[in-house]
Length: 343
Image 1 (cartoon, helix red, strand yellow):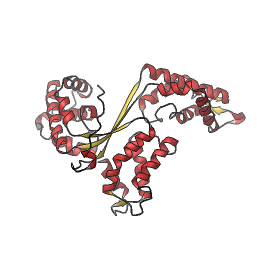
Image 2 (cartoon, one colour):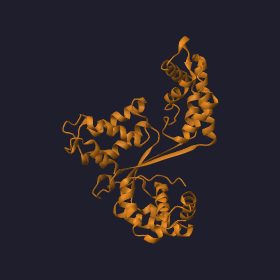
Image 3 (cartoon, helix red, strand yellow):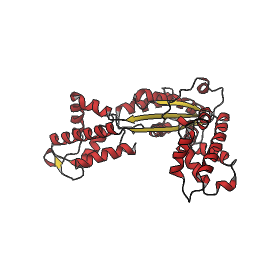
Image 4 (spheres, one colour):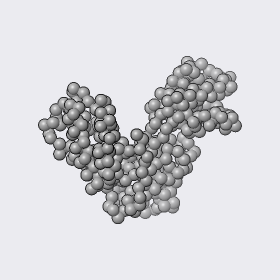
């Protein structure tokens, strides 16, 4: 699981405790797993990283080090604190116990969802096993399924459930009817295993619809201030001009203020931004002065806003943050926060 694996990786001296120095990459990895901007790229995010470290070390460096149990216990609070500090991409902590998955399998949603998945994963060359594994990896927390790409979920939940299916069928090409039948059996057994071993998942989702860009463009004072800041940090060529190739870097520095993800975080949004930059001939290598550079940046933002407004992009991530916990855990004794269904 994420927390347990990270602890083992970071405990370089094997003493069963993590020093403040050993915890630094852990905080960075947690942020990366949840889609936060990298440390140093956003003041808001940097504040959250600092709060996360402070909470892990109880605010005073924790000279004796953080134990494995303390690391796991505090992790959920860190995730919630990040969400509150960032004020976007809200994170909910979900207890996945098989109940929602069982409801999904028995609901009218199952057949259309299974048909859509089979149309993507089914082929003449794919065995039933391959199709089933691909199918469970496509199911999301709103189906009641934790991320099946997580190694612990794959090894301890999915694989044992697969072994209960007919071996001869698993190695044969999958027909649509057989796939429907065996997927339902597989998910039923997965639900039973989750009931016995509930897992904790941090889930975050966001829809990029251009509204954040619109707010920025409509606030002339804020926009001008941000453009001035970006221009000051752009590498200049001779005669106080900058290459249009710097537009891409400058735009990424404005992403947080425009409620856009950092470059590389969401491929679909990257494609929209790249298309807008292409239309502005950002790669032609020409040099422009300050006024033209700011004008091009504003136009690129406008093009991104219009495209996202026409076709909003939904993005979500789910990260397993705890292995199965006992019912005595404070985390599990409180009511879980449920994510609204996206279907």
